[in-house]
Length: 180
Image (cartoon, rainbow, N blue to C red; front, side, top):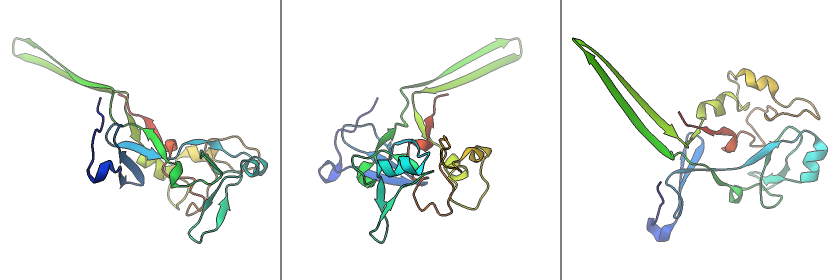
Protein backbone atom coordinates (compact mmCIF):
# COMPACT_ATOMS: atom_id res chain seq x y z
CA UNK A 1 0.00 0.00 0.00
CA UNK A 2 1.13 3.52 -0.60
CA UNK A 3 -0.33 6.91 0.21
CA UNK A 4 0.91 10.33 -0.79
CA UNK A 5 1.44 12.37 2.39
CA UNK A 6 2.85 15.62 0.98
CA UNK A 7 3.42 17.40 -2.33
CA UNK A 8 5.16 20.64 -3.30
CA UNK A 9 3.23 23.88 -3.90
CA UNK A 10 1.03 23.56 -0.80
CA UNK A 11 0.04 19.96 -1.57
CA UNK A 12 -1.38 20.90 -4.96
CA UNK A 13 -2.50 17.72 -6.85
CA UNK A 14 -0.46 16.76 -9.91
CA UNK A 15 -2.23 15.63 -13.09
CA UNK A 16 -0.17 13.90 -15.76
CA UNK A 17 -1.62 13.27 -19.20
CA UNK A 18 -0.32 10.22 -21.03
CA UNK A 19 -1.74 8.42 -24.07
CA UNK A 20 -5.07 10.22 -23.79
CA UNK A 21 -5.48 9.32 -20.12
CA UNK A 22 -4.82 11.20 -16.91
CA UNK A 23 -3.04 9.98 -13.81
CA UNK A 24 -3.42 11.90 -10.58
CA UNK A 25 -1.10 12.21 -7.63
CA UNK A 26 -2.95 13.71 -4.68
CA UNK A 27 -2.39 13.79 -0.93
CA UNK A 28 -4.36 11.03 0.80
CA UNK A 29 -4.45 8.74 -2.23
CA UNK A 30 -2.07 6.19 -3.79
CA UNK A 31 0.42 7.59 -6.28
CA UNK A 32 -0.60 7.74 -9.94
CA UNK A 33 -4.29 6.76 -9.81
CA UNK A 34 -6.40 6.96 -12.98
CA UNK A 35 -8.47 10.15 -13.08
CA UNK A 36 -11.40 10.52 -15.48
CA UNK A 37 -15.14 10.26 -15.92
CA UNK A 38 -17.45 7.54 -14.64
CA UNK A 39 -20.07 6.23 -17.03
CA UNK A 40 -23.42 4.55 -16.69
CA UNK A 41 -24.15 3.00 -20.07
CA UNK A 42 -25.44 4.52 -23.30
CA UNK A 43 -28.63 6.53 -23.84
CA UNK A 44 -30.93 4.12 -25.71
CA UNK A 45 -33.49 6.74 -26.80
CA UNK A 46 -33.67 10.47 -27.44
CA UNK A 47 -36.41 10.71 -24.80
CA UNK A 48 -34.11 9.16 -22.19
CA UNK A 49 -31.29 11.57 -23.08
CA UNK A 50 -33.59 14.61 -23.08
CA UNK A 51 -35.03 13.65 -19.69
CA UNK A 52 -31.51 13.40 -18.25
CA UNK A 53 -30.66 16.86 -19.66
CA UNK A 54 -26.88 16.39 -19.63
CA UNK A 55 -24.73 18.69 -21.75
CA UNK A 56 -21.19 19.99 -22.11
CA UNK A 57 -19.87 23.39 -23.15
CA UNK A 58 -18.05 23.33 -26.51
CA UNK A 59 -15.11 25.50 -27.60
CA UNK A 60 -17.49 28.25 -28.75
CA UNK A 61 -19.20 28.40 -25.35
CA UNK A 62 -22.40 26.72 -26.54
CA UNK A 63 -24.29 24.03 -24.65
CA UNK A 64 -24.22 20.72 -26.54
CA UNK A 65 -26.75 18.20 -25.24
CA UNK A 66 -26.13 14.46 -25.21
CA UNK A 67 -28.55 12.42 -27.30
CA UNK A 68 -29.52 8.87 -28.15
CA UNK A 69 -26.44 6.70 -28.63
CA UNK A 70 -24.15 8.87 -26.50
CA UNK A 71 -22.39 7.75 -23.32
CA UNK A 72 -24.13 8.59 -20.06
CA UNK A 73 -21.46 10.38 -18.01
CA UNK A 74 -22.07 10.81 -14.30
CA UNK A 75 -21.99 14.39 -13.04
CA UNK A 76 -23.13 16.34 -10.01
CA UNK A 77 -25.39 18.53 -12.17
CA UNK A 78 -26.54 18.69 -15.80
CA UNK A 79 -23.18 19.98 -17.09
CA UNK A 80 -20.53 17.33 -17.76
CA UNK A 81 -17.21 19.09 -17.17
CA UNK A 82 -13.68 18.51 -15.92
CA UNK A 83 -15.00 19.07 -12.40
CA UNK A 84 -16.88 15.75 -12.70
CA UNK A 85 -13.73 13.71 -13.11
CA UNK A 86 -12.94 11.34 -10.28
CA UNK A 87 -10.62 8.48 -9.43
CA UNK A 88 -11.63 5.61 -11.72
CA UNK A 89 -8.86 3.10 -11.06
CA UNK A 90 -5.66 2.30 -9.19
CA UNK A 91 -2.70 0.83 -11.08
CA UNK A 92 -0.98 -0.16 -7.84
CA UNK A 93 -1.42 -3.87 -7.02
CA UNK A 94 -2.77 -5.03 -3.66
CA UNK A 95 -0.41 -8.00 -3.75
CA UNK A 96 2.47 -8.94 -6.04
CA UNK A 97 5.43 -11.25 -5.99
CA UNK A 98 7.49 -14.00 -7.54
CA UNK A 99 7.97 -17.71 -7.00
CA UNK A 100 11.15 -19.41 -8.18
CA UNK A 101 11.92 -23.10 -8.14
CA UNK A 102 14.64 -25.33 -9.50
CA UNK A 103 15.12 -29.09 -9.67
CA UNK A 104 18.50 -30.67 -10.40
CA UNK A 105 19.07 -34.28 -11.43
CA UNK A 106 22.51 -35.36 -12.61
CA UNK A 107 23.46 -32.86 -15.38
CA UNK A 108 19.88 -31.74 -15.98
CA UNK A 109 18.37 -28.62 -14.39
CA UNK A 110 14.75 -27.62 -14.63
CA UNK A 111 13.99 -24.08 -13.47
CA UNK A 112 10.69 -22.24 -13.31
CA UNK A 113 9.78 -18.68 -12.41
CA UNK A 114 6.26 -17.42 -11.76
CA UNK A 115 5.22 -13.86 -11.05
CA UNK A 116 1.85 -12.45 -10.07
CA UNK A 117 0.06 -9.18 -9.50
CA UNK A 118 -3.39 -8.94 -7.90
CA UNK A 119 -5.78 -6.04 -7.41
CA UNK A 120 -4.38 -3.54 -9.90
CA UNK A 121 -6.18 -1.74 -12.72
CA UNK A 122 -4.84 -0.99 -16.19
CA UNK A 123 -5.73 1.60 -18.83
CA UNK A 124 -6.32 -0.25 -22.09
CA UNK A 125 -5.06 2.42 -24.46
CA UNK A 126 -5.08 0.08 -27.45
CA UNK A 127 -8.76 -0.74 -26.92
CA UNK A 128 -9.54 2.99 -26.64
CA UNK A 129 -8.14 3.36 -30.17
CA UNK A 130 -9.71 0.29 -31.79
CA UNK A 131 -13.10 0.60 -30.06
CA UNK A 132 -13.34 4.40 -29.81
CA UNK A 133 -15.26 4.74 -33.08
CA UNK A 134 -13.96 8.25 -33.63
CA UNK A 135 -11.34 7.85 -36.39
CA UNK A 136 -11.07 6.23 -39.81
CA UNK A 137 -9.03 3.23 -38.74
CA UNK A 138 -9.60 -0.46 -38.17
CA UNK A 139 -11.93 -1.24 -35.29
CA UNK A 140 -12.59 -4.49 -33.46
CA UNK A 141 -15.62 -6.66 -34.13
CA UNK A 142 -17.00 -5.40 -30.80
CA UNK A 143 -17.98 -2.26 -32.75
CA UNK A 144 -20.64 -4.33 -34.54
CA UNK A 145 -22.61 -3.99 -31.28
CA UNK A 146 -22.42 -0.16 -31.20
CA UNK A 147 -25.57 1.94 -30.89
CA UNK A 148 -27.24 2.34 -34.30
CA UNK A 149 -31.01 2.62 -33.79
CA UNK A 150 -33.44 4.25 -31.39
CA UNK A 151 -34.16 2.01 -28.41
CA UNK A 152 -31.13 -0.26 -28.85
CA UNK A 153 -29.61 -1.45 -25.56
CA UNK A 154 -25.80 -1.54 -25.79
CA UNK A 155 -22.68 -0.50 -23.90
CA UNK A 156 -20.92 0.91 -26.98
CA UNK A 157 -21.93 4.42 -28.10
CA UNK A 158 -22.69 5.58 -31.61
CA UNK A 159 -19.87 6.22 -34.05
CA UNK A 160 -19.08 9.78 -35.13
CA UNK A 161 -15.90 10.90 -36.86
CA UNK A 162 -13.86 13.17 -34.61
CA UNK A 163 -15.99 12.25 -31.59
CA UNK A 164 -17.86 15.58 -31.26
CA UNK A 165 -19.68 14.38 -28.11
CA UNK A 166 -16.55 13.08 -26.35
CA UNK A 167 -17.92 9.54 -26.09
CA UNK A 168 -14.41 8.07 -26.23
CA UNK A 169 -12.90 10.42 -23.64
CA UNK A 170 -10.83 8.94 -20.80
CA UNK A 171 -13.36 7.16 -18.60
CA UNK A 172 -13.92 3.96 -16.66
CA UNK A 173 -14.87 2.47 -20.03
CA UNK A 174 -11.15 1.92 -20.70
CA UNK A 175 -10.10 0.76 -17.21
CA UNK A 176 -9.75 -3.01 -16.76
CA UNK A 177 -8.64 -5.48 -14.11
CA UNK A 178 -4.88 -5.95 -14.49
CA UNK A 179 -4.47 -8.96 -12.22
CA UNK A 180 -2.46 -11.90 -13.53
